[in-house]
Amino acid sequence: MEPLYLVVIGIIVLGAVIYFFVSRKSPQQPEIEARPEERKLPQPAQQQTAPKPVAQPVKPTAPEKPVAPKPARPVEAPRKLPDLAGDEAEDVSVEADEPVKAAPPAPPVAPAKPVAPEAPARPAAREAVPTSTRKRDVEGLRKGLTKVREKEGFFGRLKALFTGKKEIDPQIVEQIEEVLLTSDVGVKTTELLLSEIKSALQKNELADEARVWQALREHAAKILGIGGGGIVLSAKPTVVMFVGVNGVGKTTTIGKLATKLKADNKKVVLAAGDTFRAAAVQQLVFWGKRIGVEVVSGKDGANPGAVIFDAIQRAKEIGADVVLADTAGRLHTKANLMEELTKVSRTMAKAFDGAPHETLLVLDATNGQNALAQAAMFKEALPISGIVLTKLDGTAKGGVILGICAEHQLPVRYIGIGERAEDLRDFVPEEFVEAMLGQGDT
Image (tube, rainbow, N blue to C red; front, side, top):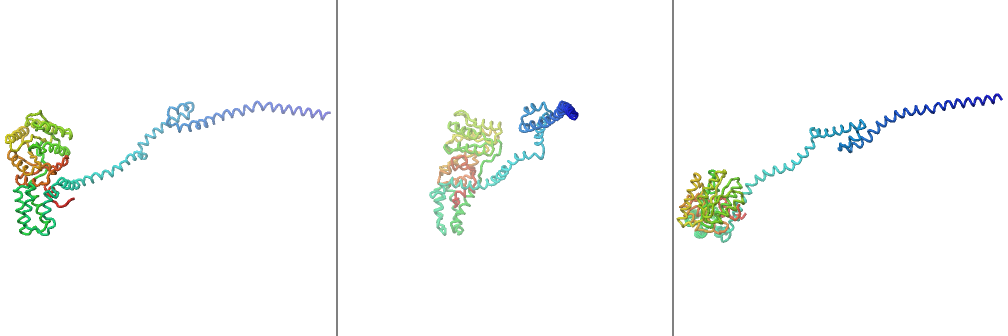
């Protein structure tokens, strides 16, 4: 029994020991394990949760500054995020100022590349202008003188005399004389031209067609070479008076010349001195509005001298360069009307010393020999300084220009070969001779 008793006692003691140890561990282990979990869990929660939820969403929402600070307030790390956003904003401004990142402004400079090719194109165009203009002048004159160059015209009839002839007979002079006289060259001018051609033919100096043409061009250029070209601005303002008979195109010529001067950056004032024709005043006012120049006019029937006087005074006030004064058309055979023009001229001199600086006689080329008579009468009444020959495109004769220059020694300032403003051209003798008597068609 003793061994059994001892076994029971041993079991009881062992159970008591086991119970003692088990009951002692169960309350202590949760305390020991709970403390490290409480200490370790908050630390990774602060380190891991703060950067993961905040750092990742903040990057896409960095531009939204008001959203970033709201979740970042409870945590210290997010508080630095708005500072980072601010640094990025500052970095952007710094990048604009930094020379290394100044490449973005370089692209705006890149558009300068298309501008570069345009820059050389401009001077090239400017250099080409004189050449093209020169060719266009001669070609334009040829087109304007189409009727002169036709078969029945001045040039065409002369050409028919020489074409196909290997040798020029001195008797051909009579045929040349007929062509010149019927082309309104005038008797005196025809005699002048033929006397020189006769002498050359007798000396056998004009043996072929080319030499005859060359001789005609040289003699014509000598006659027309007494002067020419546009008006000279000798004063400020330069006063230009236009005279002529009815219907020759004075008012239209003034409008075209004003257009040319305005294109040359000249300040122009128009004087509506044709007070006897209401349509002339309206026409001049229309030109003034069209090209943007000032027009001084009076009432119907007003004193033309007074209107022009006021125009000159106005031109001096505004610092104009030119005054273009229109006058009423009148028959050159009426002495009283011609005397009226002299009074207008004296009134201009009172308004400005030396005025009119130019007195241009406007002649209609289609009037032929009558234009020569008009030039003679106006020249007696006024100090004519130049001729404007209009409507050259409307006549097949055209030789009247040679007669005016040879018989009256009056230079041609302008010629009209069309209705457009650019068809009023400065007269260049060499170009005109080449256009009228040159054999080339282009």
